[in-house]
Amino acid sequence: MPVVECDVEAARVRLADAGATFSEGNSEYEQWHADLGDAHAVAYEDKLVVQGADPTDITAVVEPDRGGRVHVYFDGASRGNPGPAAVGWVLVSGDGIVAENGERIGRATNNQAEYEALIAALEAATEFGFDEAEIRGDSQLIVKQVKGAWNTNDPELREKRVRVRELLERFDDWTLTHVPREVNDRADELANDALDDD
Image (cartoon, rainbow, N blue to C red; front, side):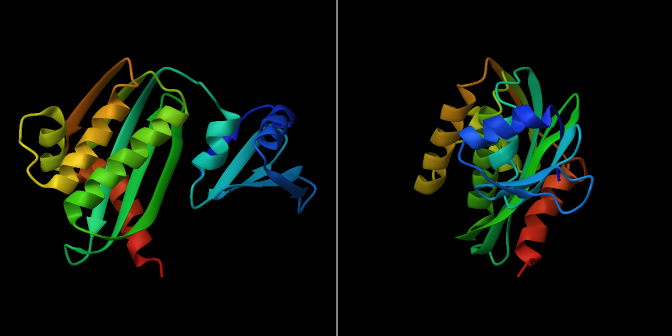
């Protein structure tokens, strides 16, 4: 649940321009509520609290073109391999968590889910206008394939790898590192919570 410290009236103008719908606050502290895409925001005096399936739908509008470096964590999960699958990702800047999300993606293998998680995370980082990305995931296969150290023989994974490389070209600089699962625990938790959520 991202918290965006901002001028809430300027944020309201940006959200209105993006097509958000608004309603009154539910208490003396809430100034207004806004809905846009799969996100819901509650405005307080100097901040927005953003909730929903995809908080980026609002946070990317309120905080456009922030530039700078972002730390990207991604993870995919599949029960059955292939089976029900989900992705989780987190964007972290020097100010803390910028955005995070976990959602089901239908039926997929674990490797397909890992690629989908990386794609979703990079798309979100692009929407926020970050210039540099330090990317971390616990799938050695994805890291090695994207960096070109391992071949990508599966045609579907090859397509996903091409999409990842296209997204990476939008950054001035990027790194992709394999990390242990415990370093990637929040993205893992988001993916598994999405699978557990009926």
